[in-house]
Image (cartoon, rainbow, N blue to C red; front, side, top):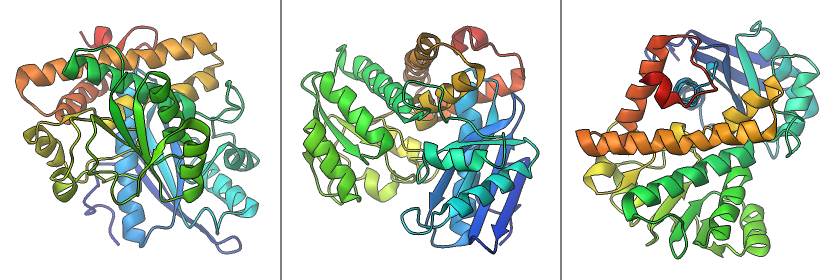
Length: 359
């Protein structure tokens, strides 16, 4: 396996491989860009089919974190880590402590938080071995940033609805949520509270049953959710769900979800545009979680954090307007804006809306 020729390689500053024989840990840490600050991002645990697949994921995820933090106006760089293994079978306290040792060995260049396959309790175990973690116990959800991610995605959906349909709520609209885990569950609750009809699917039967029983989500088979005839599709599971094959069967006018790296390739943003589908870039609207992590680290009040998350609406509205004007895909517009912030370097204030700072 080569790193420098990997398809997702993008001049990353750091790629580190770690293993621990006694616990079975096999993990990768990637730091993409630290122009704006330390590389910060979640620690994902997933049973990757190969080491190459794990490397591809961590490279893409860390790059996405760079753009996510930049667009959110955060003094953070882009980092991510992955643990190769099934979280339901392979996760142990000893393995997580070993992961904490691995994170610590990077000397603070990477700060870990929860992600798919990990939770607040797992980060606390890692914290026994390193201070370079965040998202544990300083918000109203016990440190879990997932509800903040869901809130930001909900605001993104509402902004897209306003832009495309000219209405100010999701009342009467049909939304398909793919993935009802930490984020998808809270997103479904926001949508239902706003008057939407929510259909949901999850490969984890427990997640689906909880959303059906507690929220009233309408269950759909996992293999049918993408092709459901709805107004909005919200991918909230794993990445690369939008590709040349799946885009051709979509029957939603808006795609806006929490999953990272929803586009399988860079060309898929243009494919969505060609099909008349309004795509909300994932790294823009799912930034609520990393914003939460930032405010946990700085000890900010919850109302300050909430106000910061709500700026996602302003940024997305600008991206959608620019896309209309230039006829460029929304994903490309959002990446251009993030690169502009990176060129400006450190000092981007989180106190002012990012678009004002960009001029």
